[in-house]
Structure formats: structure tokens, C-alpha cells
Image (cartoon, rainbow, N blue to C red; front, side):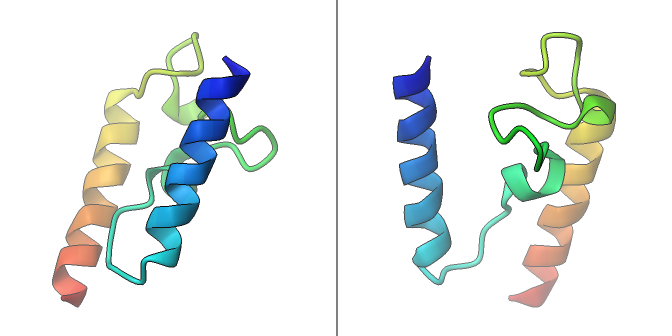
Length: 69
């Protein structure tokens, strides 16, 4: 819903502004043209749930973040 999306936007902004390391799933697999959804190559047809490729991409980013600590 629009209300849930707005909550997610606020939470993500709070996390990004915290200055703490984290895996930004939206930046990794989100669709910049439509931030409410995933990129097509990382999404099941519902454009909400992650595919195996998306989980692998998020895991790669997590490894990069952990190595930077």
C-alpha cells in the first residue's frame, strides 16, 4: 500500500543516514525507475519477491560490506 511504501522509505532513509555499514537491498536489486519494485532480472513475476539471482547478488554485497569492516 502507499502507506507501507512510505514507511519503508522513511526506514531506509533512517538507516542510510545512520552512517553504519549495511547492505542496501534496494540499491542492489531495486528498480531505480520504479523504487517500489525490484529490477525485472531479480524479481519473480509479482515484482516483489526475490529470485535466486537476487539473493546471490544481495549476498555478494553483504560479503563486500563485511570485508570492509
